[in-house]
Length: 389
Image (cartoon, rainbow, N blue to C red; front, side, top):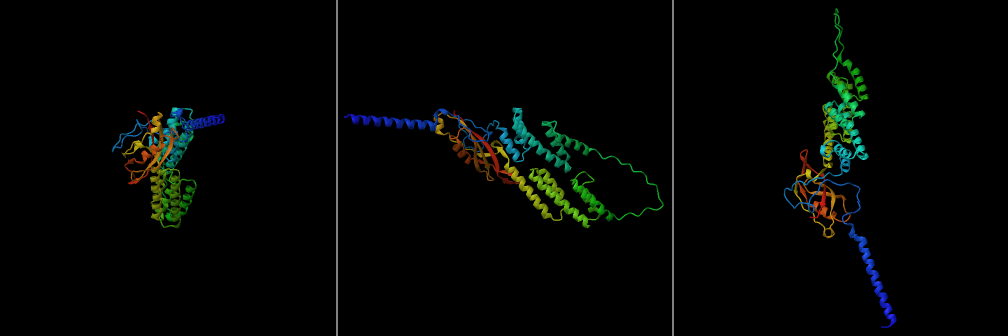
């Protein structure tokens, strides 16, 4: 072979070696086989609360046993609970409980403390509404709940003191005997009191004394006007004004996710409204709000009656590389028991396990959730773990 030909062959061999080396480096960069199951966290949401042994899920059965449930990051779930109006109920999944658990675990957890303070503020609003409506037991329970966590909470302590004062019996008024006179004075026509009562009614409305205090509230004054002259023009005007105010407050309570307060305002307006359709519409809004609020509660899978559970497949490549991991899934149990809106919230690895977890949950089935006599969609969450035997 000539020298030029030999040199050309050597160059081709060197070029082939360089290409092979480049391909190998590229494979190493992409696959990162040394990384094991350690991967960057690509999602901001924290971990979920359910786990399974072995390779994710139990075999498809009619009545699978409940999964052991290690605590999910309470801050993530607490924020969801707060946004859904789950302030203290259900107790196990409420914002008050979950923020409290995070603070008890770490007394320096600023986010947990701020979350508890936010819940306390929302609770105090409900307590003040309950006090204004005369629901003293509810108001007292709320004040007590706040004080157990924040003993120096000024708003809760003031509310508790107001409840004590409201429960005191009225003082006994002893009337001074009136000397007998020769002739009794002419009794005024009761209707003549309507303008006076109406003025007192307007004053009570201006002071926000709508249902309380007893005897001087706008509702009590209106009842007195109705008892004297139900057809009087001022009585009708006061009735319409109070009904409008009560229903407006019901709407405000719904916006604050205070369903008990909203129901009380509607119940107070119902016997006064001239148009029953107005009350019916308000009640329909409350009913729909209750359904939506219940549906938006996020509960662990263990809180449902599951009828079909399909195990997720363990990725072959993860088995070959001895990689374990987990996937946090949020989804909706539909009114017919199917699963929908399946979302990967977080996972231990950006590439493995996610598709397999979603594929498994797609096949799960549940007993429909019944609320207020009808099936509703219900949000759920679970952590699926991929563990090698």
